Structure formats: structure tokens, C-alpha cells
Length: 142
Image (cartoon, rainbow, N blue to C red; front, side, top):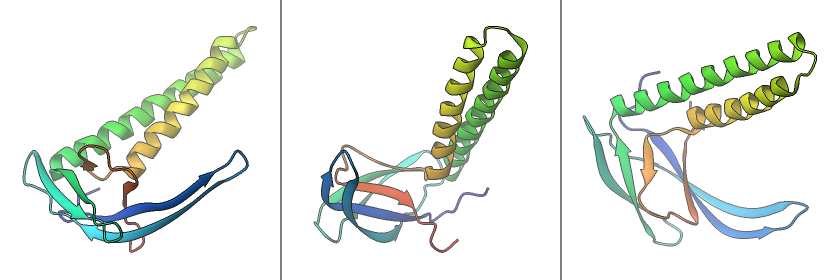
């Protein structure tokens, strides 16, 4: 997957939250923005939230670093899938499948985490605490 030199991102601003045990209820406002990737290394950029006026400092990775990060997430996901397969073999092959169940559950959790890291990866990270803001890929126009 080639890295876009101007990634389309979406800034999420959490405007109100009322979390209860039954259902999380929150309201967000979003806006699309783009940043320029540096040729190599990391660069700093800022974006201003249009709703609260807060300036967010961002660290933007180069296309090569972004590709490397995506490869690492994909390799981690592949290793987690192998762990799930090994857990399935242990469950079937042994009379006490506790170790296999541990491998299955742990591998499945690792698959979910690494797949989410790959899916939500943008190569753009906030510097400091961005609360109540979140930066996500803008997949509305793909």
C-alpha cells in the first residue's frame, strides 16, 4: 500500500460524554484535514480545532517510516495468527488443552490489537495529551 504524501485525516472533537454501565453516550464533531509528510524522518505540524480553538501539535512520519510501521503491524498480526493456529493444534492434540486455550485466547487478542493498529495507523501522532481530540484516518472518500 503506497503511503499518501498528503494523508487525509479526520479530527474528532468529543463535545459531551455521559458514560453509564448500560451504554456509552457521547457526541462528537469531526472535520477533515491533511498534513504534508516529510521526505525522511519525522516533522512537526499543528492543526487547530475549529470548535474549541485548541492547537494540536502533531508528529508526522515520512512515507518510508509509515510503510515500515504498517509492515510491523502486519507482521505482528501474522505472528498472532500463527499463535492461534498453534493453540488450535494443542487443543486438538492434548488431553489437557489448557495451554492451547491460553494460546487461542492470547493469540486472538493479539490479532485484534495488531489488526486495529494496522487499520487505524496514519503515521500522524499527537504530541502531548490531545484530549478531548482524536485523530483518525478519513476513509469516507476511498
